[in-house]
Amino acid sequence: MSRFLSPAAQGLTPYIPGEQPQDRRYIKLNTNESPYSPSPKVLKAIAGEAGGSLRLYPDPESRRLGAAAAKYYSLAPEQVFVGGGSDEVLAYAFMAFFQQGDPVCYPDITYGIYQVYARLFHLDSRIVPLREDFALDPESFSGQRGHIFLANPNAPTGLCLSPREIEEILRQDTDRLVVVDEAYIDFAGGMTCLPLLERYGNLFIVRTFSKSRALAGMRIGLGLGSREVIEDISRVNFSFNPYNLSRTSMAAGIAALEDEEYFRELVDTITATRDRALEQLGEMGFPALPSRANFLFVHAGPLGGRELYRALKEWGILVRYFDKPRIDRYIRVTVGTDQEMDVFLGTLRDIYANLNE
Ligand SMILES: *Cc1c(COP(=O)(O)O)cnc(C)c1O
Image 1 (cartoon, protein in one colour):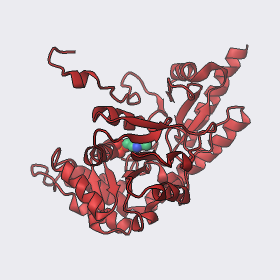
Image 2 (image 1 turned 120 degrees about the vertical axis):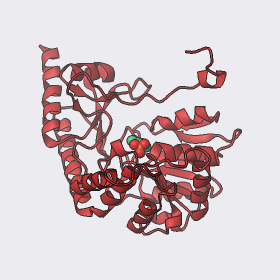
Image 3 (image 1 turned 180 degrees about the vertical axis):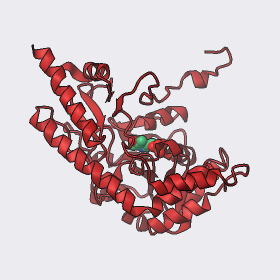
Image 4 (image 1 turned 90 degrees about the vertical axis):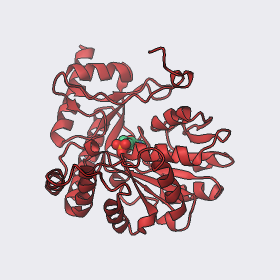
């Protein structure tokens, strides 16, 4: 720590990203990236852009990508905000809509960045407990005053609320903004609450190209909402980081939206691998929650989360564990290729077989 660090910055609790190791090759099942490359058309678009006009600033309004996304989701271009990853979109939502004195509501077990941002912006948190089985009861938000952050499907559980349940939360209080982080919704099969945008001005949906579109390295996120909400988010964006998306990212995003066939194939492959691995884990005595995402939340057995994480790492497999009450006996395992999942399942079997000898 330097002697210049402000008291406010000293009080921060930064987000701890999953490891991106450089020391050796791992089977990397720890940060919910895609095991597959993006579409060849995306790679071509990136190369084309790189060979073109990188000396010029990108369009600060990301209009071409915004228009492509609007068309893709059947929205007006003014209902789409384009951000440098969805984490940035979430940060702008905090900056635009939360004021000190108002609490921010989110479940006790969810994506860690909500709490990080709540602290960064000096907001009180109202933490809503999930049920014993990790399901979210929509009723638990009723009577809560603050704006709400929800990951749907939730992380790290993979459980998903139906659009009807999201609607229930939206209706409880239409003066409360409900931010639904749909980072994993493409793996959930028709569960998006996008159709509710038409009727609920208090809904703001956040999407990312990092997971289902295999573009975590390009940092592309979307915010979808009413024209007014998008205008507010843009206002904050232009007060902070106007050129938030690179030219290559925009080109990649447009090409990704255009290659629907490739996208469908990726999603279908990953969900099939997920469902097969889920079944096999059950047969092996490691129950996992019924995930609608591209990861599995797996009970770690007698070793517990941290120890199983360590054992797997020794064998060259990276997963995520959580030093947190209620979930410290679980690991979160990204769905890799079929082959990677077979290695994971075999290693899990070996670790416990050795333990019992
Ligand atoms: C991965 C993830 C994000 C962040 O995605 P980026 O677009 O890469 O910033 C946001 N929300 C949830 C729930 C995630 O798991």
